[in-house]
Picture 1 (cartoon, rainbow, N blue to C red):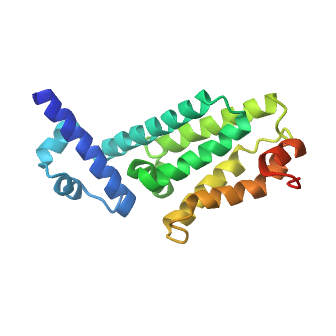
Picture 2 (tube, rainbow, N blue to C red):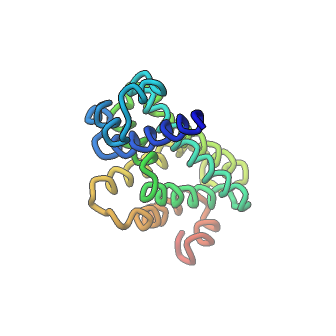
Length: 203
């Protein structure tokens, strides 16, 4: 019973930390904010986490696990690598709306990316997935050229997240990704595949 309560307290602290990091950023959130919102003492927090950076690590673990679950479901669907890339972007869009840990991971990386781990763990995991899918797409002959386009694609994700988080398009993150793919696909994949994915005349 005591172990179960401890696990529940830890999970609550991570959940609250994600919500506050998302709302106020890493620098704008202090330990007192987290304990007050979670309804626990500082002693209870320090039993699980010795520093705020350890809470960041736990939030990153949560968001990375959510990403891995999304990738697993997409992989199980048997999609082509390019279709998987598109589905992944929409999975991220859904997580931006529903998962504070993912939103917090984006904000933490924007504000503290120069501090490396654990502040960019989610981004590194996500970059690895995108690059692997692009390698598979190149191997399958789906890409129009052999250039490494992982950075432009990640720039699209980050740019759309920044636009969405600014409130400029709060209800339309999925539509932003759809519009971006309509612009990018004709230059990324073969004409035949672009036409197949977007409809006649896409190339």
